[in-house]
Image 1 (cartoon, rainbow, N blue to C red):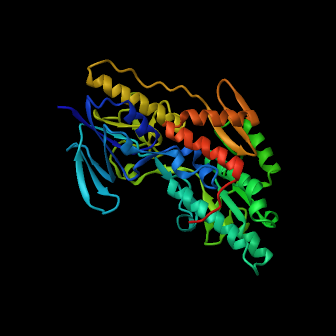
Image 2: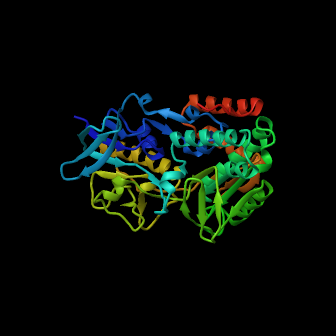
Image 3: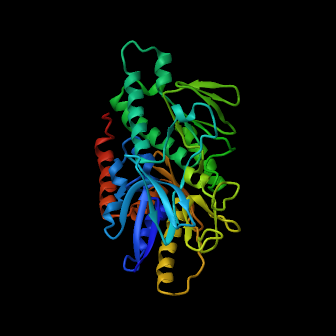
Length: 407
């Protein structure tokens, strides 16, 4: 009888592990409220229509040898070897038994307990988030186009604020800038002079995980693009149409995108698995949860105490691939080596057909790096369908511009 494996999550770690597991050795179930894998690296591009939403998702049910269950895991019963779940739609409760459990639930956006963030800010983690932002961006321009609108109202509608100077915040600001330069001037004539993009970062520089020179270069490019970067700044309060900053200033806004950091999911937070001060589950060098024989954790929600790795999609993907192969070896009685991480670097888009590459072999920026950025992401997309769709979207945007329809 095959051993039962349950994978929690459908992100980079979970999906990479799933693709490696041998269905002849294991009975595999995937439990997640999201029924698709999302290539989050290109998610900011969907917020303004550079790429379409379905071009960067791959349905989990396309993996024929595994059973997918659309539900939330609410708790883990280690003693009984089962998980308790709630259906994502009907809210029906049920439980599933496992022999091996793989936790790859990632993290959620951290609101830092700031008043109004959950109610009024837009997060950017899922396709549904990106779609809401896309609708809101177009609404802001349509509202500013109404007859009888004062200049002050136009400026308020067209003030876009991004909180967080990491890759997600920077790339969203860059995509929004491109939309304004390449499409707004043609499709919303006369509004470009009222537009303001403000990027607020708590630290003293953007892209903290990148090389200092690349961070400085990004600031220079953003200044040239009229993106107002405010470092060493924190938003202290958010209302429906206004934000308040720790330096005493406040701004009315049309859209606030919150990309200011991550924190543990409710499942991880409430579990009795060993966690560190950052609420990450502590694992050994085999990605096994400390003190457990049959529970593994990968991706953003896991950390090896003496060797923490970057919290990136690349890390989760590599851990998932390693764990899938390791579990196949365990089932065959073969020796398993500890996980070894080799950093391939990071990429980021900064607008105006310019990108950054921060790798051990190459640290560069500009147009050529943008071509490299695009080529890398095309190769990393998980299916031929995704590759073709993204290439077509890029071509369509170049020839016809972005679609500004709201529905």
